[in-house]
Amino acid sequence: MTRVLVADDSETILLLMRTRLELAGYEVETAADGQEVTERLRAGALEGLPDLLLLDAMMPRKSGIDALRELRAAGVDTPALIVSAHQDATDADAPSDLEVSGFVNKPIDFDRLLDEIAALTS
Amino acid sequence: LSPSLANRLRIGFAIGFAVLTAMAVIGVGRFIQQRQDFEDAVARSYQVEMTARARLASGDADRAVARATVAAQSERREELRDQIAADTRDTTLLVAAGLIAGLTGALLLFSGLIASMRRPLEELVDAAGRLAGGDRSARVEVGGLSETATLGAAFNEIADQLELEASQRDQLDRLKDEFVLTASHELRSPLTSVQGFAELLMLERDSLTPKQVETVEIILDNCRHLVRLLNDLLDLARSDAGRLAITPKPTAVAPLVDDAVRTMRAQTESAGQSLTEDVEADLPAVDVEADRIRQILVNLLTNAHEYSPVGASIEVTARVKGAGVEIAVTDNGPGIPESQLDQIFERFVRGDAGLTQRVGGTGLGLAISRSLVELHGGTIEVESTPGVGSRFSFSLPVSGR
Image (tube, rainbow over all chains, first blue to last red; front, side, top):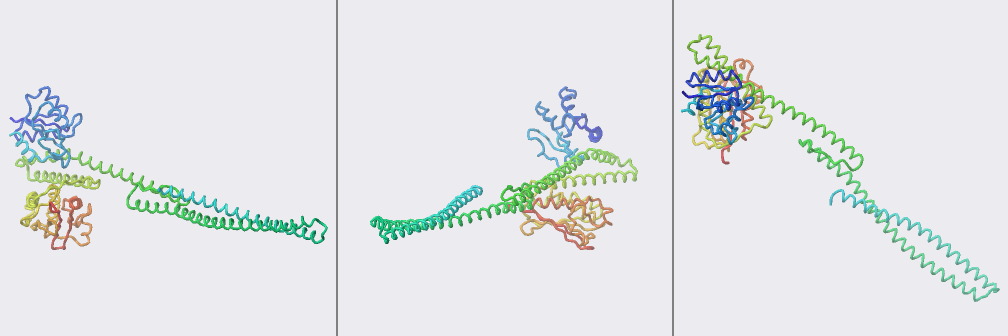
């Protein structure tokens, strides 16, 4: 089954993401912030790497962007989507050294998000 | 020459001429004394000669000595006359020179005085003009006569006060923009949850009662409204802060119109409204940011949809007009009274209050549309006849011109 790791500091958003993604047939792991994402991937708590990362751009302790930068530096090339509360976040906002597969704006358009996830994990 | 150096030179010259004038006055005084001395000496000489002649006439004295005295006195007066003539000439020259020097000095002093008054005044006029033109840093160099110096100091004080007030206002504006920005971001997460869970419910609509479905639809409607409001507020705050920026690229018009029409199709169909497009063939590409033009079109189409009754016709047209491309949204809705046309592009101004009861707009759409059109270097216009319909049109610059 395709595995997605979702990180957001809001439990409600995590529950929403988990429900929607599981309904669409994905296996979902969640993390409360970027720190947890890097720690868990480093500790190998997840069996192997997930197929996709869905990271909130702004989180306490470690943002999704910082976490992704660390993972990329460690050689993790898993596709990643950054969720942003910016109305018009675009690829232009991404630090040029970062490999981001795309941006998702809040409030989330789940039909579009599911299409994108399907395209990235196929 | 710097103005201050020229002024110092002028004052230096003036002092020099004043000294010459003073010397002339002293010279005249000396000459009066010389003249007096000359007259005294001539009188004394005549007296000595008279005495000698009297002795010569009485014949008692040594005639030779008396004769010599007479001759000597005559010679002495001749010398005195030569001397006084020379003194007169010198004094005349000195007076003439002094007079010229005095006049020139007075002229220089006077022109210096005028200049010392005029320069600060000119500077003041210039600074006042710049201040009125919005240059908050306009100040004058305080100097010159005490009156102009006081005036200059007062001007600087007023300018300081204005600058302080303006910077406080700027700071308040920044705080306001910052607040709107933060609020807009912070509200997005809970909104995501509300909308997301309502959508979850709708995924199971088959197991909901019609009443429950209607309830969830109302929640979703209001979520969309809230999103629009947040987006609009953010755009306006950015526009106010001068941070609403676009990156125009050569863009084909037809796909833009198609896209906006597709976005609106479901809404117009549910209201039984016809939505058609008429894009002129072979339109040149326009220099725009596609997302922003789509936003304007959706704003205008949403207005047409929400203000027009069930079964109305809405049409989007695009054609070459003048040096640009004109895109227009026309509806056969209720129209806008002439009294409201002037303010229709102002923020929070909305169509007739009776209608807005069921219209979900924010009152910001047209204000933002105008900002966006103007950011592209175009203009937006409205024509409307109550009972007949409305036509909103905007122009876009053709790419590569």
